[in-house]
Image (cartoon, rainbow, N blue to C red; front, side, top):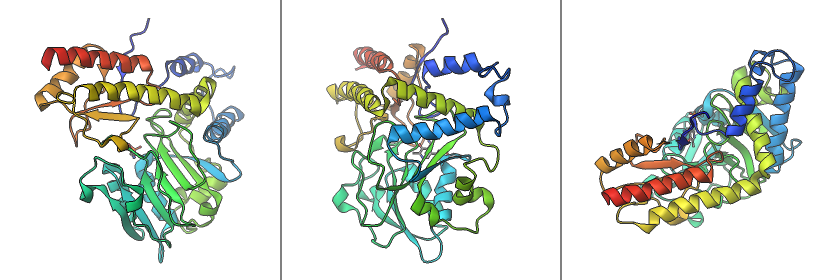
Length: 365
Ligand code: PMP
């Protein structure tokens, strides 16, 4: 038996064991080609099928039509989208509203300001900190904005939108869904553009998914460097240059795994159960496990908590690792503890964690 740990890494993160095994089995000979997909031409029919299947599965699982939206596979991580979105959609006379819910939103805002008039519809930092999601009624949105940008899940701070804001009529939502892509089904219609780095809830690092609605695509700038242009990537079906073939192939395998399990309805059920289990354990002993996030804004993907002292937090990470539970250290910018419980993390791993938390409490509480 291969040694596998309970993996709570924030990204790159756990991948389904079944997918890893399938990929391993296909690595020397992909579908009788006598080579791996890593060694195949991105213009060949084998790779083309993988590429198109991945697009179809994303559309099918999320419930949108490929006649209405394009699915692009781009490089550069979600961080590249922080500038590529405004580079394509803003420009002279255009404005965008951004909701600042955490460090990743801050980075998106900083880049957007290079390309146009950017205003904050709500700034969590100025309203008590990154421990909550803005109440819908408090968003200040401009009716003539080109888009409203949100970060649906804040990987570092452990907050998540449970209901999306409703922008003024005609203003599309643009969302960074890097850390909660495909965790449940939702109505895609209000979204003009969704982007997500694959390495959390979808696959390995190396590919960023950009889902863009045709009307927004039509509004994109024409005179951009080719590799920056959504229009060009859409025209060429993300094959203008060599796409990150291995990351797309593995993502496709994860999408197949998701579909086989029962799609996003089943995933939501599993994710709710995992998060409930973990938050109940945290809430049961508030004098020891302290949850910094307001209850109505808690993330079901990245669960954060503190212990009474930083020394105990360090001890927790050390003892957890020795017990086969890895990736529990909070992001370096905020400290504390964090368990990322994305789609591929099974309930058994969460139960192993809560069991360990109980033991740790007995010993140190
Ligand atoms: N947005 C969010 C919400 C993230 O969690 C991350 C990565 N942790 C990023 C953007 C940046 O992604 P990348 O490293 O792929 O550029």
